Length: 469
Image (tube, rainbow, N blue to C red; front, side, top):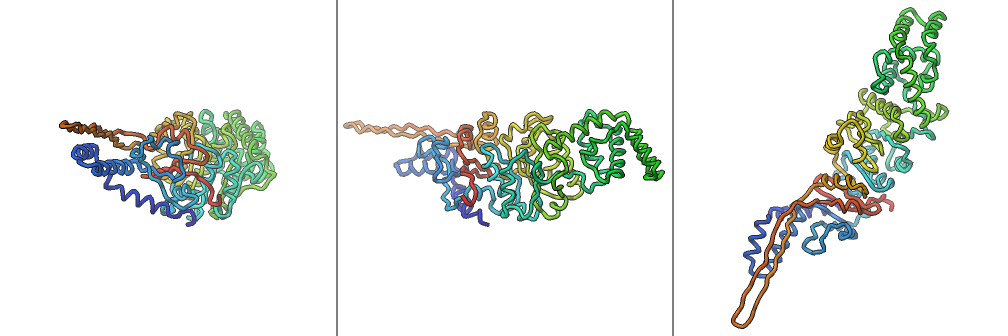
């Protein structure tokens, strides 16, 4: 694989080399220094402490990375407890994100610039396609993400659903039951009721007979107040059998009390739908064909105010999953906690979440952010954290990266060789403290495409850039 290089052989060797060092504790080093007789012995014990810190911290940086700027060192040579990763690869960060075996794993990418996050998503999209698996991307208008998808090295086939590309033909080839289910599940909870679903079923049946297809536009445009009259008209014209008339008429009568709420709902969801996708003048999407071909489907859901539209798309994807369609899901700047169905969609599936601030996207929903954070991150193999300006986010990610036991040594020898009065005194302090592997300050001052890339036991601080850069 072109992205891998020799990064992981080096890191594995460093880890194995420091394994024995990690067994050294504060007490052992303190005792060793007390018993040291020569400067050479003292230096050897210092080296043991240094190697123990390296093993415990497991943070790597590239030779050109300014470690002092990132507050990874205290200015003292023996305090420099980070690996310097010697690699010839120009894309060490992508190599790290790609993974040692190249298998598809879930990933969270947060902070920094939009193009940096898109670059970090490249291995996820490419690995999904290598594994002959489709990808569905939900985004809020990320043109750079679509540009990345268009690269033939990343996608064997793709379809963009937006106002300037394919029209979102959400009900294409669906039976009445599935259409009614999607609409009912998308309705706000305070207006969703069995009566509302019955009325929508009657409307769907009438439109299928009169227009031959269902769109949000013709659902919203139909005058619900005259639905009963239209059903009687179809029956009188012989377009309905007796059983069909009884069934549709019963649906209509059972839902007549919800005429106003259904009309308001259909108008609202259609307004959001047309604001993003326009009307059916452009080429219609064919999501099932793209899933069969294991392509990439990028669906633009517009801005964060399109709650009904986003709910409709999520319900559609959940329906596809229930029908046995398997796909990887990529969410770009979708507020995670705002939509409970996201948890159901990603449970047991591979996913990528890209966000300007993943932590803030967990606020404002019905679920507690801490609970949702633990649920999502519990299934994530790779975390890529770019620069964050929010102190809350910096603290959260610093806590997530964890702490390590840092051994600090302060050792001095004073000698007095005065005539007939020779004396030696030692100043000795050895302590072990829990310190962040990555500090909040480090995350705040990451520059450009520099990121903290966390994969299980290791963190690499490196610049994320495209292979051809």
